[in-house]
Structures are given as structure tokens and as C-alpha cells.
Image 1 (cartoon, rainbow, N blue to C red):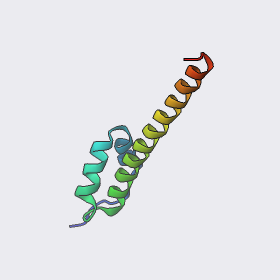
Image 2 (cartoon, rainbow, N blue to C red):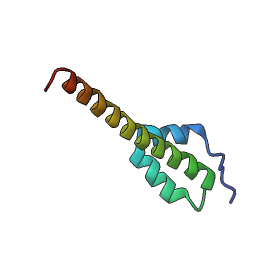
Image 3 (tube, helix red, strand yellow):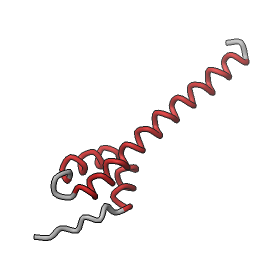
Length: 71
């Protein structure tokens, strides 16, 4: 049986929008559809990294604001 394993952009986008789904798809498809699994996994990883960076930036901005007002 031949499977379609083109590693589509939409699987990566799904993984980015819902990281848990991207991780599950990566774990389920890593042997049967390695290209598609990689796309979903990278999407999930990008989403998590963007989330961490945004939290760091928010805390830096809040800390700078607190220092500016002498809190």
C-alpha cells in the first residue's frame, strides 16, 4: 500500500496552531509518514518556541515599566 507522504504545509500549520496535535501526529506518523510527521512536529516546535519568546519579551517589558515607575 502506497502512502502519500509529501510533508504538506497544512500539517505544519495544524501543528503550529495546536501544538499537542502536532506532537501526537509526529509520534504516530514518525515511522509510516516521516515527512508529514516532521512537518507536524516542526510546526508544534515552532509554536512552543514562539510562545516562550513572547513570554520572555512580555516579562522584560513589564519589568522595564516597573523600573521606570520606581515600583
